[in-house]
Length: 218
Ligand code: DX5
Ligand code: ZN
Image 1 (cartoon, rainbow, N blue to C red):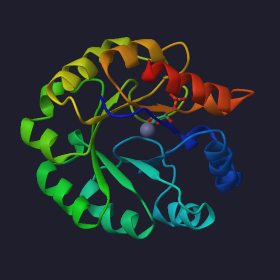
Image 2: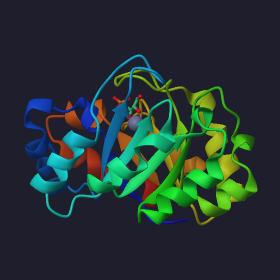
Image 3: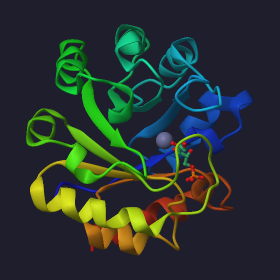
């Protein structure tokens, strides 16, 4: 299995201090920062887009922005997110009719490509071809749209199904993940862990980051 990576979701941070919050997480041991981009169409909420990500990448040198694109037309934002310093562009398979071409477009802009599946989408939506070209697969463990929701354990078997088919691929889980729910995610084979409220609301975020990482590694 690929190495463990913890990606705190800044959705749970103080947006007024976004760069400081990102630095705080990196200091606490986070390797990636999960940036939830919502457009008010694919999901009801609106969060942030390329202009804010661009400020973050300038303010936090070396940051790896794991951009979770909860947007209706993911083809539309590849260039803007690349120009803003995005390192990984993860789109929802439900939002596009041509995922393979989109993966190639993301790679052309030198970003890693991720493909996300929502709770009602089966793991078989990730075809062998998509799995071959994508760098990361994201199994949502809540309905996309907001932080702080309850973890949906019924999504976890999809992680195991994808891990069996793609032993060397990064597989991310996102939604309601924290110290109480990490065990099943790790057992199923996910190695990239997103956690928002569980990390940002903790009195000692670095301890939560370390615990999540340790659980995936052992
Ligand atoms: C939900 C987002 C998640 C969310 C995770 O739509 O994609 O990244 O911020 O937050 P928690 O960990 O609080 O569920
Ligand atoms: Zn997310």
